[in-house]
Image (cartoon, rainbow, N blue to C red):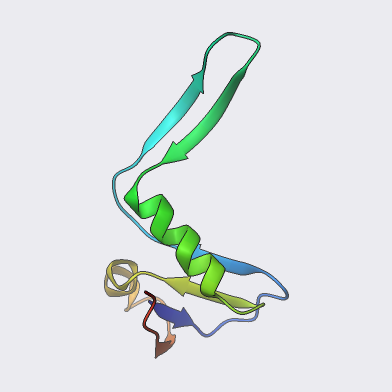
Length: 79
């Protein structure tokens, strides 16, 4: 994961990119939720859980795609 050098007070943000499933899931019209599931969703949740308050962690794929537009700080190892 790469850390973005930006000020985001008290927020913990994780960003990943890839395929996922999103849509309505439920057993009836009255009991339906909008869900997003998939490996990259789980990775973004892991990045968010490991971020410090005010920190944004992104996957190496996102960092590689956006490196010309965003200045990144340290590279971190997320297990």
